Length: 278
Image 1 (spheres, rainbow, N blue to C red):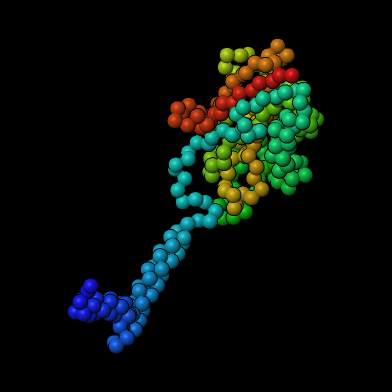
Image 2 (image 1 turned 45 degrees about the vertical axis):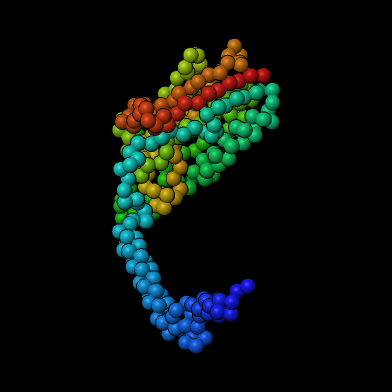
């Protein structure tokens, strides 16, 4: 059994341990009095308020150097990518299943082209073809040139509401990504080729050209009504090619837009696969 002396030592140790947390004789909590804790908390409150103020001041000064209409640095994206609509690189069309191809391709195309409706585009300016539409810098709200979906002819969804998918000759729409200030040299146009197959194609507008009047782009805030020019490619798939997978590559040719970068296969070009069957 423990001796009386050992019990006294244990009791003293317990008392010392409790006093290290809170000492009722001195009023200390964790070795500090209330005034000491108050001074420490006041110091850290002032310190962190100072840091927050410095951060806010730094952000405010940085924001003063930015232009809300034009990004400060634009050198990392000098060339646009090429985008396909419908948004799929594998287009499988079963002309015997209209519900499926309408859901997968026709409805997304119709939704995408809503901003190109004549009623919307008539709000924009009728520009001169073949000329850059450059506008004064002091004019904050820029005008946009008209691009009516009717320019896409049989791929507009107006005369053929299935965009060619119902007859096994699907249309795809191509557009370049928006880059502020881009003015492509030459006459940019879309050139599509089929790998390992021979597929006839039709381009809309004529020759698949991107007219200069849709350049330059001035940014989302300044160019609120701007829509990218489109090129529609109608694949004239013959019944003999039904069931055959066709790989199509489309490029932007005729200008200084880069389309041969091995590190980025969507820079100035896009590759997709098409299969039509019954």
